[in-house]
Image 1 (cartoon, rainbow, N blue to C red):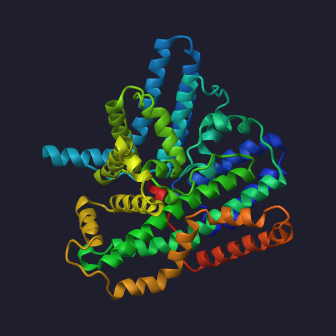
Image 2: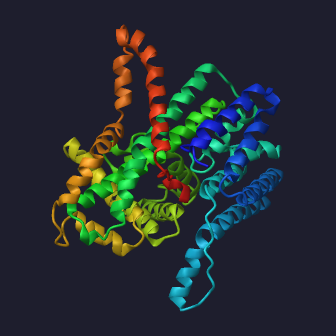
Image 3: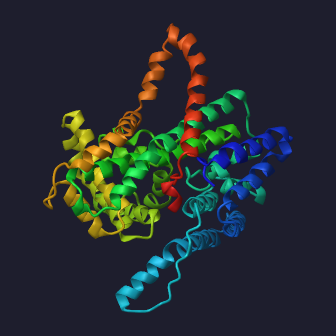
Length: 472
């Protein structure tokens, strides 16, 4: 089940909200846990068992780490086993096919390789569970003795299948006791509708165009059409994933949880390092705290720092998918961020500000080619077409046809990838403003209801509704 599904919007969510707020406080966590398991089981019931195994396993590891808190050797061994077990679980389902394919190719073997369906959200809930055990080890979080409370943390449906990756210590108190208010609930509803609108009204149309163009042979399209394809994917992946994060954060607020932000308008960045401080913030901070810093971070000299950056970014790419192109995509960013640390950032700072934005967008869009493509051959051919290196036309009839059909979505995507809403709020809510004091409170509900109706119309009339990050 996905948030932009009519069944979720008009059946599952209303029923869960009604049960949650009508029943006494003592049943609220039970309702949320039950709803979360049903939500996850909707598409693939058998993988609920896998999640329950992960919950029980990490519950036991947490108790053991706490038990050995004053016995350093046993404590280290236990947390090491927890990491190995979690990585092993993730690796079996996500990377075993990739490993077998490469072993067969490299050593001319014939190992049987039955494709394993990837359990939705396994990368996210595995990282959450693992961070809980590590934080107990570090004494950054208290051990959870109630397995149902830990299960709720790992399985909580708003952020279960595509993040944001929530640290246990940020929600531990709210699992035990949360504040509910009309103001917080209303804020959650507004945030959810904004995310839903980003997903359905911008990400979906852009996804349809990106899928159409990336299914073509790069040699058969003009440079202009290739740029439209990668721009469409650039907008799709941002509005798809940030829209999901907005919906997750909004749902969390409806139930009394305050999740941290996961996106902060990354496409307005002026360096790649800044871009990654703004994009998928929860994943970046996870790798920083649990991989980069334990490797030594930037504390052991410049060359160790560059080595650590390359390792972390290559692993980040591999986290996204079992493919050499994902690893190359991660390594690509590791190299660029290392170059910025070496001195490129000082050169960038001297450039005209618009050129800094052009630099970031160009680097990011080239990176998205590798991220979106299934092979290196396709990626390199596509990049050649982008820059006209393979003799293709600059523009053709298809370019103008796609611009005519999708031009308004491109305009909306570009506008709302910038913090225009923040600027408008500052303008409208400024002190002594008639608009801020009277018109905005009246117009706001109308706007949000209009967006919800528009989204519903789009969902009724379209069957294209994927979430990119569900496959990670």
